[in-house]
Structure formats: structure tokens, C-alpha cells
Amino acid sequence: MDLDKLETWAERWQMRFNNDKCKVIHMGRGNQYHHYTLNGKPLGKSDREKDLGILVNDKLTWSSQCQAAAAKANRIMGCYNCGGLDHHAKECNLPPQPKKCHYCQSTNHMVAQCPVKAAQPANSQEKFDIDISSPTNIE
Image 1 (cartoon, one colour):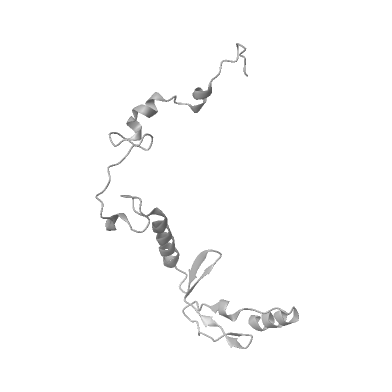
Image 2 (cartoon, rainbow, N blue to C red; image 1 turned 90 degrees about the vertical axis):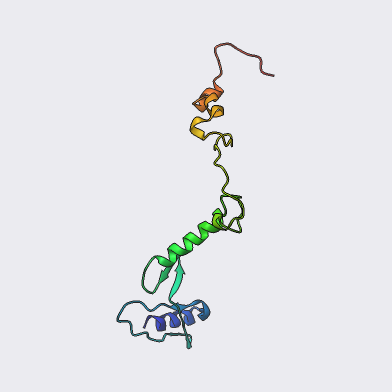
């Protein structure tokens, strides 16, 4: 068995494996649920484990990975009404806040109709156009 070879290799190189960090996931319909040992101690069983940042479960479905990703996104996003990170908008005591222009933060218009943005040059290069045909004194 491969675990026996692993034990032999570890002994030869004077290494030890931490049995508490080694788990067995039984996969497949016809799995006989064998009991595995490493260093003479039984390995723990698990129905899901994280491997290279991906949650793998015994049924090879994505539900655990999707739930974990959604929970992480919700923790980061927080409440869009008040900006609090300890709750979500549906749990917030404040009423929904009016939408704001992303450019000037006004609640009277959205960014497409923003007069402040319209007054700015369309191209950022236009802001820095310099006439180099006439010399100037730079001190």
C-alpha cells in the first residue's frame, strides 16, 4: 500500500508526519470505507477538506466551495445602507439610502448626467496639454 511506502520513506529520511493533519475522504458509490493508519495510528475521516484553496467534498460537488465564497463576499461587502461590516442591508435599522453619483456624490443625478464630470475634459491627456512651441522660464 502507498501509505506503507510513505512510512518507510519517512523513517529512512528521519521525518515524521502529523497524523492530526492527515485525513481520509471516502469517495465513490462502491467505497468500502477502509480504515487507514499512518505511524500505527488511525487516520481521521472527513467529508470535506480544503486542498490548494478549494473545498473538496466526498461527493465532488461545488456546494461547499460556493457557500464558503458567498460567506466571504458577504463578510467583505457588509451593509450597503450604512457601510457597516457587522450586518447586511436586510438587518439594518436604517432605511435604504438614496443612490449617489459615483463622480461627485450628489443624490440629484447619476454619473451619466453629472455636470461636474461634463465640465471636465473628456480625455485625461487634455488636462496636461502644454504648448512647447514657446520657451518658458522654469525656476
